Image (tube, rainbow, N blue to C red; front, side, top):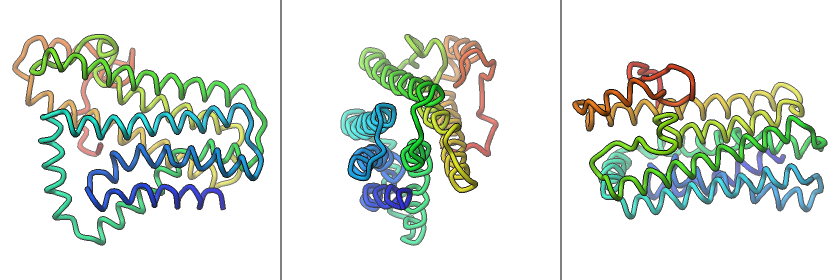
Length: 265
């Protein structure tokens, strides 16, 4: 029942994608996660089951979603390059048939519910606060901070160096620190649930949500790599940067995913 409730919330909010198709997976994503967090706080505040850990984790979902959704809207309105990309996406969205839009809408809402489900299941199973849950919340918070810092760093850098790739601050650690922050956020959510998940369906929802978002983030890293190759591939400084800085995971010598065509993002 609780899982169905957050699915309905995600369906209602992500329906914004019928206005702009790309918003199913961008603005609708951020605000759906925020809406799920609010729903869990309100519903379990009424039903009972909230504790300090689940209050923090639900609130972190709200913070994460509001920050992401707002950031994406502001970026679309202020960045000329993203407006161009967005306009292309809008034009593509107009050609998508309604049945495919509906399928995308339902699939996205289900995915968003699955991503947040470990927190939901901790609540609905009335799980006690434990060390694993606290560690998961800490990882989640670290991911949100990293993603926020990465977005801020790149925006500030691009204002002064619009034609250069960003290689300062957290971009010295990995080339896609915002995607790393996203992976850490959802790793924290998944970890928080491993001691409280019960039965096949709870485990399936949690695993599907986590695996899909990590796959999507690697796909996003691949898309960014291909775009940067087109824009900066002839620059010796970029070639040195891209062959000496891991693309997504720190300390792991994975420098390119451009040939992994099975990745999407």
